Length: 434
View (cartoon, helix red, strand yellow):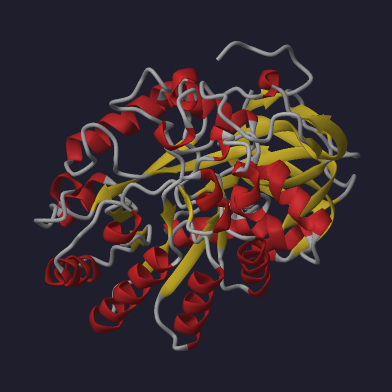
């Protein structure tokens, strides 16, 4: 079946400034028509989805999700996580280069693309390593990585200690029109830390990571961005001060964007008070003041995107004492629910939040996604905005069940996910094993 009609849904498409009831007709993997509700008639052989009580948005674009393959397949695989993403309404994922082996050669890029194609669910785009082996010593083969299909470059949280090398990598990336993705961290200030450097970490006897580890790294990078002209994206901001520096940089018209993890907008350092290892994340959960500042930064455009920062782990990874556990949350299934919750609890409109997880991250990644335009790929998420539900392990399709949001009540549940015109998830059908 190569055609699909979505009838009478509440269409929210920030890229085209649409928020109204409409019909969408999909043919041969593309959006063929968008017209007012109940005006498109189904053709013979086409499937129809009655979206009268549902919200229709572009498929979500997640600008940071670790899929654990290659290298850590005991935690998760591209197959398992792309299926989980599709069931969560996420149609495109961006994989950082800190896999095993590191994504610093075209062969690794090709491996990931091939495994994604074989999985036949959510799409995966790839960041290449900024330096060879992420060791911060020598430039990677940037042009070869671009030709292999990398959408950007990153050194993740691995330090590039020599500022001259960092400047050269920025200049080289700019030459090939490649965006640099930065996870700001001063290694010498953060090494060994596992919590925000404040009263709670002191009371719990945990080594803290100061805000200065983030702000110093941002400031250093911005100086070199100004010199080289490279486009840069700052990922996973965690502090009020960090957001303020990015705000000033944008006012100075530097070519920078930024994102925040969804969990940073709902959790604070108080959530680790009982040594809850599911709240062990890097960068750490910070103060309520930081959380409120990050929400304001999302609202005023300083922060361009919200990501899952998905990091699935096996059960044992979270069973040790807090400081010895592995950092990260399995968070594909909570990206959309947490964003809906954000719009319910703040002044942010739903369409503004939807933009942060669709068109804006797609623009950052430089890909043609995150919008519902005639002729565009039919990557679509359909959810019930009135569905109240509670997160249980049954709702987590990722191999990683490590999340602090178990037991949380949410409103808004994905019912259908369409990728390249194919209905890959249909909540009305029986659940298939991952």
